[in-house]
Image (cartoon, rainbow, N blue to C red; front, side, top):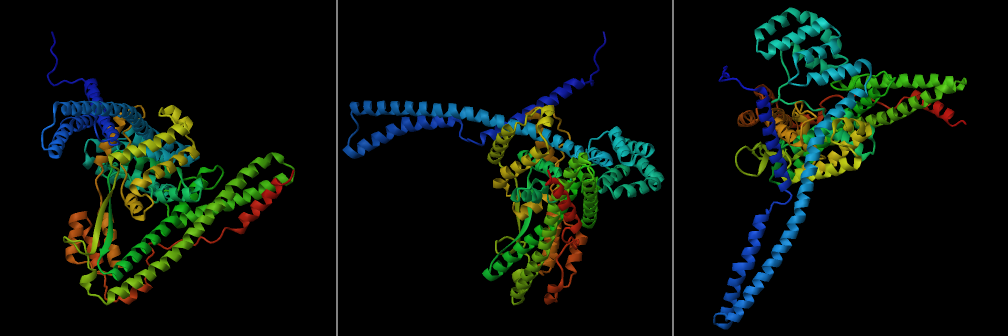
Length: 631
């Protein structure tokens, strides 16, 4: 008889054990969030009633009778007090029982809503990514799908090779990158260095040719070629200013200002916060002399407005490019990820010029009697009309950059006039204990259990009203572009009361943080398993504050004209991991000439020259609409 090997394990048992553990952890997470709605358990409420209606009432009655009459109660009085206690206690227990029976149904409903949202959000994330690819055409669709593959940290070598084929259209180069990924998985970095040195001259021209069309995908593929894969601890970079675009779509009632990538980011943010993500926020605060405090508040507000204005211009320009890329028959094929503002503007103008020419040619054909071209003419006209509206929003946003920059210069000038008459000790950065002076303030963006329950209830109601199911196949059928964008708006509305997404400091903190990678969550998992995996992946992301700390140090020197002292440098390095080279460079800036700063531009980059919409665009639309007015 053969005996089993002592160290042999059945893989199915291990898999089942892991699944059971996930289910248990996720179920506990859901129960904890549900319990946050009503924190008083049934047993505690019952003991409170029994204690109050029993011994407390009898002791109070006996003491009151003794004080009032100077003697102990008679037997008749005891019968009265005991009867009163029993009747009131029984009534209280019955009332509490009825309340808890009702609360039990409410708790069960709340638990179901939490499960519904936790199960639906990862599936909606996959559906949104599919919609992003579906709205592109040709090579752009292949490149976007390949970039999504390369973002998965656990992508197999075959998946890496497939993504490389889609991007490079070269099977030999793709096979090489797949081989490098095999060596990476087993830690043979010496062999990776050999292959990189041997084939770099071959692949580098291919990477350079791809970069102009897809810079982010090129970066991901080059990382794979050099033997590096996405790290769970580092997280995934967010699409910058996505919250601003969602807010703009809400304020202006225009879904075109929001992209499907923004929907994806909002879904990720919602699932992160529900899973327990905590995003730190660093900012300045000043407490002390009221004139200095007022000047500080004005300067902080001006800085926030200027950053918002700069972000808004690029954000609107990206929305225009994404809109043109999603429409068939335009010169813009790829989404706008990773491209400079000047290039985005150039691509948009060329595409809109081409659209105007197409409309003129179609109008000439319709005028010549080709009525079958009228439908295409209407479609192209609608695309150009929407594009012009987006272009006007771009122009308006970049005009606001100049106005906000002028206001920032005035605030800086006022701050310098006030601080010039004060000692340097008044405005230096305070590091020790205390509350007065210029200090770095820390806070956290997070949801407590009660807020998680309220957010889930809000989103569950919307999902039910919109008819969005939690079955993956049905979800794909029930969610289109309009429904996806409306869902992003509902997520913003649900989160805003709890985390303040409309606040500039909150948006900056979220933009500077990397998102958790939820690539391991599969559609067929239960809500409990998704809850456990989500909480686990959120815990894997490292808290990265170095960039935020360096930005504060730059603002301290550049805007507030405060010297970065050695103690402050050491504190920023030790507390937040700021780079020593960056801080030393800032500390060497000469701050003696305070008055010279008013001639310095605080723009982080020069805005592109957008200008007004071209007259040819309007002429093409007018010609087309005249034809539509005919019978």
